[in-house]
Amino acid sequence: MEFRRILALVAVLAAAVACTPSAEPPASTMGGRGATALPRDIEKLVGPADRDAALQSYVDGVGQRIVAAAGLSGGYRFLVLDSPVANAHAVQSYVFVTRGLLALLENEAELAAAVGHELGHLVQRHAAQRARVRQGVLDAAVQAAATSGSVNVGRSVAQDGLLALRRYSREQELEADRLALGYIVKAGYPGSAMASLIDRLRRQSALEAQIMGESPDIGDRPSASSTHPAPMERTSAIEALPLAKAPGDSNQKGYFAAINGMSVDDPPSEGFIRGRSFLHPVLRIAFTAPPGFRLFNESDGVLAVNRERSLMGFSCLSTPVTGPLDDWMRNKLKPTPTDIQTLEINGAEAAIGARPRGSDTGLGQARYVAIRQGGRVCNFAMVSEGADQDRQIAAMIASARTFRTLSAAEAAALQPYRLRIVSPAGSTPASLAAYMPYPDLKMERLLVLNAAQSPAELGSRAQIKVIEP
Image 1 (cartoon, rainbow, N blue to C red):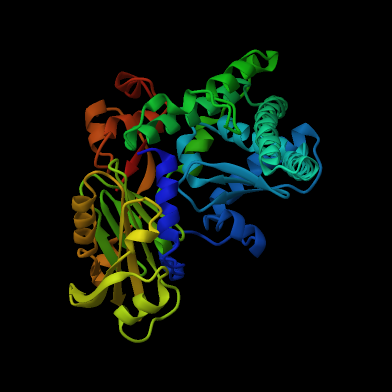
Image 2: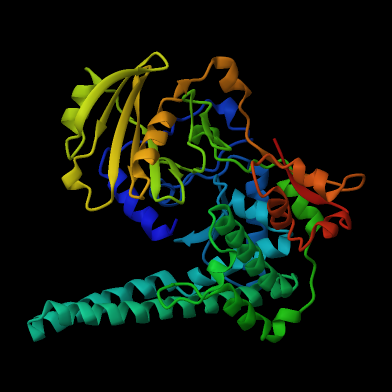
């Protein structure tokens, strides 16, 4: 299913209600050794910091080593975000990496390359430069429309300007790569870490595409609309520089020691995905998506997507709902659903309604299911636009009927998957892959996790990373 179609369907779902499945868990469920506080405005942008103080200290130490070696000033901080999605970014004087990125990298030098790249953006004030160029594009478009008296002329100027802005953004990415290469070499890391970081991200992107049923090379294709250069373009640009061959210490041993035992899941406060099932140990709720659907967990809800142009969103209201659920659905959802019916789902009060046919902007059918669970209301919003939309809607409604409350024992037993550093000695690549707690692509996931090109390569390593259920 193309990502732009997902976005169109998400827009339909987002019109239903604003809600969140998150809950602040007890401290005992967080599995850390203290928290790193962020300013509230920053946390709203990037999410919460990870609570493992030792991991935070390690990552900040790598960042400060780069700052010192490069002779930079500015009071930079380097933090780990509590997210399993591989990512890194910078805001103000903060550089962030996620747990997901740490799991993907192979050594400290690659971590240095990642934070060095983000540091390069901060040093060059790339975000501010882009904002000025973007405002210039908008001003030029408005002026062109006013001068010509034609909205179409203004729109044409804006489109040309935005394409130029994307090219400018790609140039900034390459500049950040070049700066990062200089930073890490000065800090004593090998220059090759910059190219290997890009390769880690490229392979992870290809794996994610494969999981979604897309072509693995989708991220390698050049695109005029992209704000980032293709990975191969970045790699070629880096490898052409003399510093790319500079020697240094990668410190894999120290890196593996730092990430050993790290969670690779969403925080317990956001729930866990287990195959097609979503289980939330704090809210004590669970449901199972239909066959053929993939689950994606976000802080403001859960998405289930398949390749037949169908999507199901799940979330829980942050405020209590009084009165019957069919009245709430009739009064609160816009446009007002039709064919509203009441029912019970696993002993809980529920209501179901349909989005009016004339209001779906050509995106097929939509249904809403609301379920009362204790003092809160959780809801499913479903959209299907495929040729088989009737069957798809029926399958998603059946999925909503799997919603249930977890027992205290079931909730207590739910623990995040963790990354472990192990010796492959005495194991076969097949047995190591079988240990991965995922429903599919086990070997592919293991190879990407360990930056290995083939199963045989795993057996030649002294240590490898595995995911432990």
